[in-house]
Length: 171
Image 1: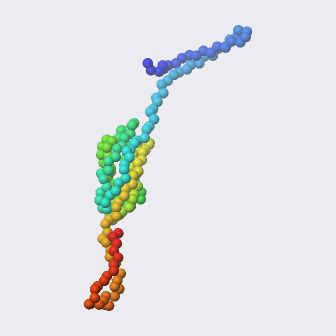
Image 2: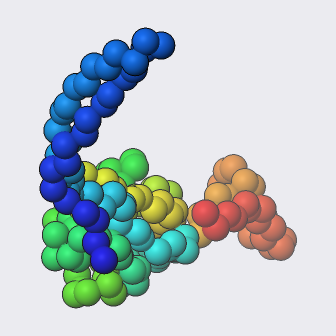
Image 3: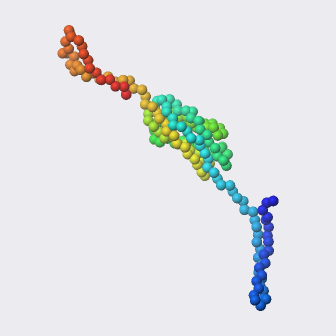
């Protein structure tokens, strides 16, 4: 049985000590008021921090999106990088259907460092965000050698041993 709707006539009567009375009538109408459900925000799964070799594609990185009260087709996904210069903007792709999605991106040529990646999901009113760190490793550099001695090869004794001193580093 649902709520009772309609109109009722209410009569109020008052009496004094001498038995005199007065009355008033009024109508009360009960109407149904639609109760809209509260909008709940979308949800994103956590994404672990990622490490990628230089000039290699990042991903596909899997994540899940859900919204308890909006069709997933209406949930807008976006991604931001901070700082932004480490990732090629034209390489960023969010793909997938339903709750399972993937993110793919590529570092800008020759770039290395750490960027915060923020995935966002919005249903038009509320949003959810998840952030993870993306580390782009520096490219491998060749070792560097620096001769320390002798400073002048013209004074080397051709009959004696040749002794060289050098420093080597591998950045």
